Image (cartoon, rainbow, N blue to C red; front, side, top):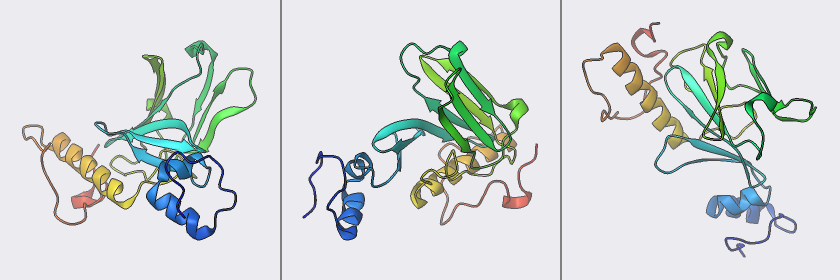
Length: 195
């Protein structure tokens, strides 16, 4: 029998078939039970949410040349207390003096460190990672985290392609442009992205 939404957390006693059914029909419950980490879309925005064991870790979105990561810091934590390192292939986020890091993961793609930065806006930590390979879509913000589902990947590729077209042809409006079939990669289509 399938556990109802809001069933107690913990996956003890479930068969693999029941776990698969739970993931398919009630992904939020499966994430809370620790069966899967989960990435899902936020309605009304381009942001994706990354959950681990039922807890929201961060939200993220991407465009033609950058990936934005949003984290809700603990209450009372200020910018001066944060210890953040952005390298070409890694993102580390923690609190100064605490050896335990909130995030310490390889980024999905390579990053231009000199053009990447972070700030606190409206009590939210906002990290901007500038893509080294402009136009290349990332399947996730960080490696080892749940990649986007195929439909979300196509939507992101379409958004990036429209952004590329808009940048190359500023006199036209591509905001409502649609694509038939699979959307090509903006970094390779017709000679790739010019800088």
